[in-house]
Length: 160
Image 1 (spheres, rainbow, N blue to C red):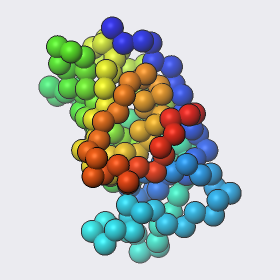
Image 2 (image 1 turned 90 degrees about the vertical axis):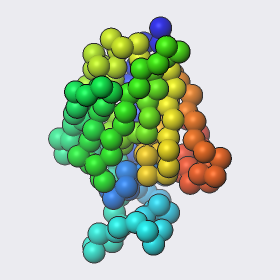
Image 3 (image 1 turned 180 degrees about the vertical axis):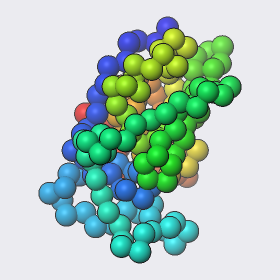
């Protein structure tokens, strides 16, 4: 059984509004560019790159929804509309990819807790890194990603 999840988030770190990537800097850094969105394959709004924070996302009323399917998967309407999949395995639950918004409501969801919590997070590619450090701190679990994608991680410290 996984330890009880307690929400631990970095509320004031910048988050790209297009892709949901969380950076290890605050608004005082005057950050102007998201590396993920600077990639020519990524869509960028005609108004340019913009940033927000978890606090502002919550204040704006964003919420995660859980789509009842075989994975009890949380989805979000923030940024590119990420989704994550909660996969049940005999060795513990795997959260495959991530959504940016992590809030107390999501932590308390019976769809996560009653199924045994999260044993490990696996991320398939950089657009799903989002606020991964906060997810690992909250759910006390390791995160795995491909070695080739490791340089795209923006937060390499998991200190809240």
